[in-house]
Amino acid sequence: MTNDERKDIVLYRLENARTTLAEVQSHIENGFYNTAVNRMYYACYYAVSALLVANGIQVKSHEGVRQQLGLHFVLTGKIPKEQGQFYSILFSKRTAGDYEDFLTHNKETADSLYPRCEAFISQISLLVDECLKSL
Image (cartoon, rainbow, N blue to C red; front, side, top):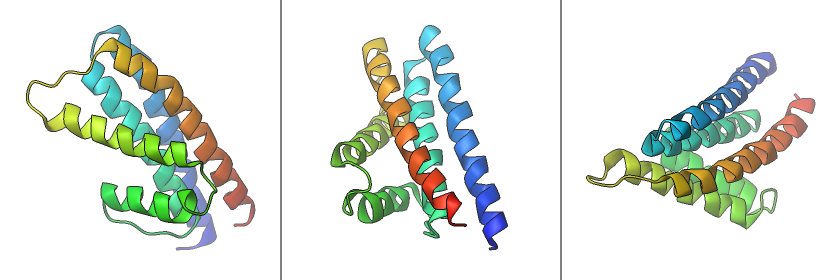
């Protein structure tokens, strides 16, 4: 992959993160809390996957994305431990909402996660921007 191709993928994924996060308020307003949590997770996932691509880190699964975020960014102090924990919590909540029977997230949960997602994506975007300067 050339640097220009990598840059295009990274920018595309960051844009996906932002547009996916923009969908969330509509889901919350309409009472679709499981879907809101799902979209928040995917917004963060797209941002993290952009960060990994920007740094030349290849993964093949959601679990791989989580592990590589921890290994290359949380353990090195580039991302605060709390942000890494938040991503893991969001992953768990999304999985539970998507696959567990009779589990329905509520407005309180969705409302409390949303600003944390915004902050997470902002932090990841800053790291991506730093990385793109060197491509």
